[in-house]
Length: 296
Image (cartoon, rainbow, N blue to C red):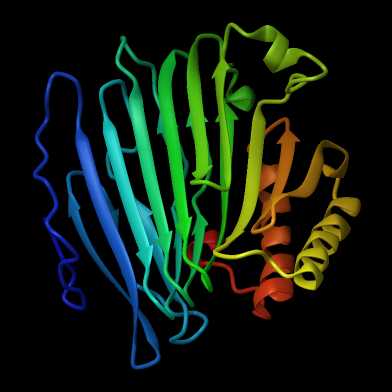
């Protein structure tokens, strides 16, 4: 277990050992505001790591990159992520590459993420896509809790197989669960055998990338701010090639959601980045400052 010199333990983490069913990895990452600077502290057990904190926007916003050295999740693996933004802090979390759910021999591969945002805090959850390989039995669960006065901006990107590498999603399934307790929940299983869902005109219509972007506030978003954010997203969609297969709405007073279908990941990710820029400006009056790793 390694804790960078600038950080201190967050809370005890359970030891991890390999078993016949796979690995368990735990990561706890907490942001706090200290003398005007958002500071990250973390503790991990197993193969999950947080790289050095970066401040391309100045002290107020702390950027971190989450890495999983094994490079993928197989049947029996469990990855548990817990991220908390403390009062007044602003943290941003991304990844250097895709999460990969590989073929399973019978046990599910599980990633469960809990994001908590305190009053007056902001958190950006911007991982790259999850790739579901043919034969996987995947579960990808995300739970979000935001206190009044706090806000979270994030996304979830799913890719079924690797169409460009001639590795289609022919077997297996992926369960996706996204929840803001008591406010909004989305849960669905993408099964390779469900051709009506994957290829039907009322389903994915042959597209193999689906993505959601969400803004979650701890209290109802004001009407003016909400409408401004929706209009900003619609302006992006109107000018984007994927605009016809995307839409934005407000399923609850404190939630905004954009959804998009695409044949592959890259255009969908490009669209989400543009909407992130628009929502940062409309909702937080912040400029577009992408994580440095996106430029590599």
